[in-house]
Length: 270
Image (cartoon, rainbow, N blue to C red):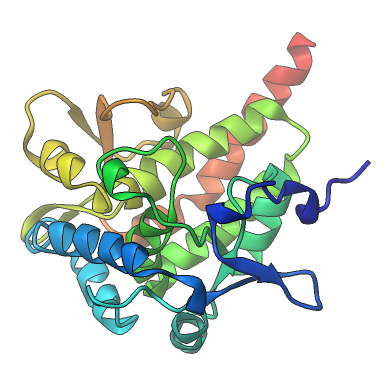
């Protein structure tokens, strides 16, 4: 039986502010945000934005101005979508949390970036097991103004859907997404910079990823990434570094080839 996104809605409606429209899409209920929510956004925003000059990729810094994020206002998805639609054709799509792989990649292939509407509590400022709106929106949305990165997401989703019945293929895609979109670094004229949302939304990992002697920083390599399990419960042990967003997008044919090879091997082992 196919799962409907409606079945994914958590029983506790306090986990976010959203409602279904007539087309069974979720909508952000913007007027439900409280003063505490605004305070959390403001605290996280102000703490992190001062860390990002000379550390975040120039594309992200331009993007955060373009989408008009500020400390005193939680982003309104309808307003953000008007801006994104004009630039790259993308939009922020409300989800209750983690959704099944097929639905996630179908949405992203059609230029819908999944985001939750709930914000962490003050006592959770430094760590969450599941991404909240600050991660989803502050971390990801500014770079949805970059056409090469957006095209990479679309084509990566097409590859995932092509091999959606292969757990190994989906794991490969997940690792590529993790070590690029979530925890990627980029080499720019001014030095090493961050473009991964998991780092951009983390004050601690911002410093660690660029300056710590602990992790390895490895040139972008598709085969090496798909052979590298990712880490969820602590800072990363290695970061992969691209030379440009054009390089990332141009690696799509190699990604498809490598994953296809893994799927063939997977079938021979069954």
